[in-house]
Image (cartoon, rainbow, N blue to C red; front, side, top):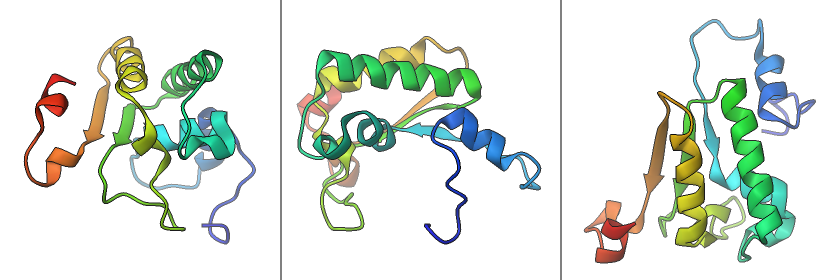
Length: 132
């Protein structure tokens, strides 16, 4: 990725601007929960919990991305999803309160979607996953 991507952007809007004129097909993008956590929380994104201010910052970034043209939110809680170093991806550390806050934010944008993978997707959903 470091060699193949022009990293002159830091926001979703800037990313879309960087793609302008460089792709020849229709494209749509989800806002990645891991990206939100890592951008706002830094190293604490893996293993930590956001402060109220950090959660507000994630929500603000999410809304900015949606206003720029994102389609929705993508998150995972699956135990099979690890990063390049073998550590659990950042979204796996999110508690239900964080997932619900982001899900409510998706609902504030008409015609969008929420994509979530939970451990039960691999076998059978737990009662807690069904409630969530």
